Length: 92
Image 1 (cartoon, rainbow, N blue to C red):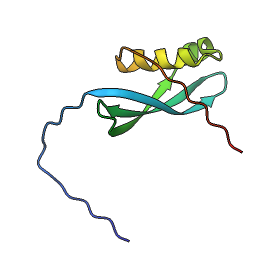
Image 2 (spheres, rainbow, N blue to C red):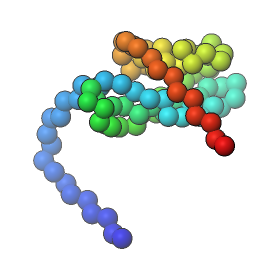
Image 3 (tube, one colour):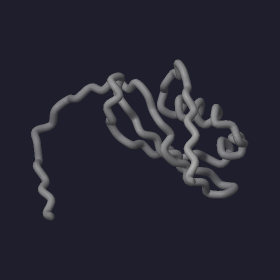
């Protein structure tokens, strides 16, 4: 299968983010982490993935709190959290 690229005239596209999901955290022990989030609009449509680098200070403050990561992402992205749902997946 081949791929095609189409150049288009620049246009403005405004997105209103409605939610994010932390999809992965790549830890660099004792130095930091890369947190990857998936961003969705207010209708639940996927918009893009975003990688956020976490510095050593924030990494050391993280501990084991999922709430810390959610609040940290909100701070990095300029979001205000309304509600948080945690889903745990396990492999069998």
